[in-house]
Length: 467
Image (cartoon, rainbow, N blue to C red; front, side):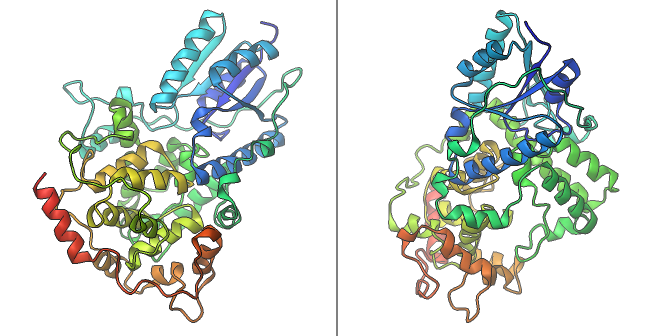
């Protein structure tokens, strides 16, 4: 090959620190950072695609600060990669492993083809705390229940995060697409401006959030994480999803902060993310099929066009907790985890709508969308998944709200109707939702819930008992 340059193939690792693929490429010589907008990213929903665009902008700026640049190409990675290797005469490619079925198949094809043609082609760990293939029970099987999985990885060594390497540039840079030409925010329409007020992309933002959390919130995390009306979480989920911060960095920083019950619970949430990817790796059908056997005949509806599902999506069910949660999602691209469970339970149990309907909606709306975590979370609530909530656990949104938002802050923050002077966050919902929905803060909310809590619970329990 003509130069000593290596390509750092970027996917969900938009960071310079603790990046084994970047470090390996940099140690070998000049680095060409490359992001390929391929099928896995083309297929993202509106909000996660917008968030990816912002992450790429932040990464490009970081690279420019270090005398490098981000090269953008669009197309099938299996065709783009050999073409750019030939164009640049680079010696090889390094990337961080992903564990969804598409990435595993494409990566295997590319690695085999490149090595056959004499190129270096190396994948590296770093997206998770532990590689899914390395976590096994004593019988050599994969874990199907979270608690023993967490106990196992809690005892495993987590490598210390690596410093960002010095970057040297190639003799010449290949041509790059313009990020703006990709029009990645087009499906967001006017909602993109609203999301921009509530999201800050990039590695620097992620590190700032982690530091702030460890300094101010971590000690109370065990209890505060469930209180939807206060800021009690790390708010790192979108950064983790795009790899703007590594789980190993979070692990190391939390350990250095001194541990304690709050931090142990926080680390277990990072472990829960590993568990989702562990299961996706070993049972990839969980992404779009019932994980547990015996659920395919359950009488869920998959009609996404009916008025009730539309009301759920638009935060108009008449149930305060559910409506506040769905509106928070419209405005911020995120939803508090406790609220996610309640909103998902109401859809799948009270409304008897298939979890796939909700999973697809979240996949379109979440800036922190992660295929493994999203699918597992929905199936956990619905009862069809690994470590599922018992079928008789039907969250009561009113009881949950009184327990986790006793002062009513959450509902006031996100529901404008009925307030003489609603806060900005509640009004932003009407900026974010499409004009075609015909919603405005002067409208009255429904007089009654689309499905009553007692009625929905009894219907769900009858269906679950008859399964």
